[in-house]
Image 1 (cartoon, rainbow, N blue to C red):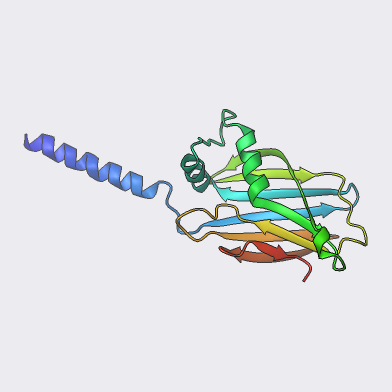
Image 2 (cartoon, rainbow, N blue to C red):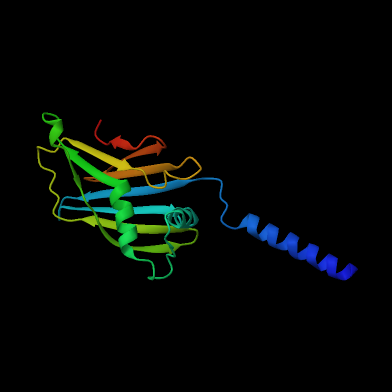
Length: 175
C-alpha cells in the first residue's frame, strides 16, 4: 500500500510539472512583415504567431488547428486573417474612398513553437493617388491576455516598424 501511494504521488508530481511546462510562455507577441515589391506590384506578408495561442483561439471557436497536418481547413485560417489583418489604402483628399486589399493565403509552416503564415496580393500598384497606407491587425486580440503585434513595413528598401498593443488596432504607416 505504501509503495502504491508513493508511485501515485510521483506520477502526480511528474504530470503536474509536465503540464506546467507545456504551452506556457510569458509573452504574447506576433510579428508581421509586409513587403511591397514594385517590380511585380505584389504585396507579400509573413506573420509569426505562437502555435499554442492559435490552437487555444480556434478551440474556443469550435475548430481544431494543427499546423503539422492539412486536416484543418485552410478556409478557417483564411477567414481569420481576412477578419483580423488588412491593408487599407487611400488618399488625403478623399478619405471616404479608402479601400481594403484582400490577401490570398499561400500557406503556413510550423517552426519550433510558432507558426508562420504567408499571404500575398498581386497586381497592387501604389500610384500617386495612394497617400495613405494603414495596417489593421487584431490577430489574437480575443485572448485572456494582452497581445502585442509588431509590424514591419518595407517599400523601396525602406523599413518602418511599429509595435501595436491591444486595444490599438490600426497603424497609419505614412504618418
